[in-house]
Length: 197
Image (tube, rainbow, N blue to C red; front, side, top):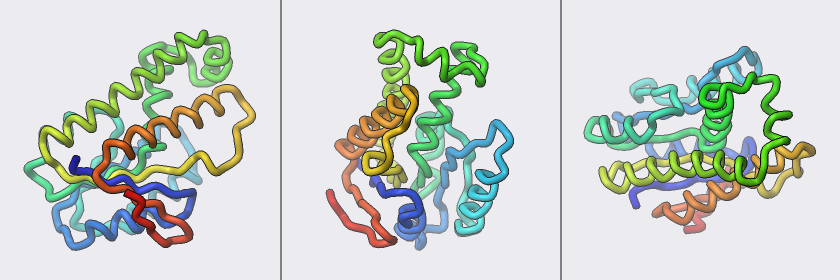
C-alpha cells in the first residue's frame, strides 16, 4: 500500500510533520477536507493558518466528496497527495449523509440520530466505511503515494451525548482500518513524530 497515516492529538504537530514529508516535492495535491458549509469564524481562522503554512506551489483541492475519483483522474499529475484530515472528512460526510441524502434538517440531526435503531446506525457506519474502502482501493490500483492526517480520539474525554460517543467510536474504527491498510504509520506527540509501523 502506498499511503502513510499520521495520527496524533489536537495541536500535536501532525499536520506540520505531514507537510515536511513532502516539502521537497513541488507537485503535491493537498486535499483539504475542511469544506465550510456554514459560518464559523474560529474554524475559518484555522483554515487560513493551514493555507498559509503550505508551499505556494502545491495544488489545493478543497473537497470531501469523490476523493477516489480525484485520485484516479489525477494520480499521474502529482508526485503525491496529502489528505488533511480524516477526522474532518468523517464529520463532513456524516452530515452530508444526514442532511443531503436523508434530508434531515441540521438542527434535528442529534435528536433524530438518538432515535435510530442499531441497524440504522450501522447503515450510516457502513456508508462511511464504503467511502474509505473506495479511497484505499484507488490508492492501491494507481500506486499513488498519499499521506493521510488523522486525530487520535481515544485518549480524550468521552462525549456526553449518544451521537458524540457513537462518532468517537466510529473515528477510532476508521483509524484502525486505515492504519491496518497503511504502509507506514506515525504517531506525533508534542511535535515529535514516532514511527509505529
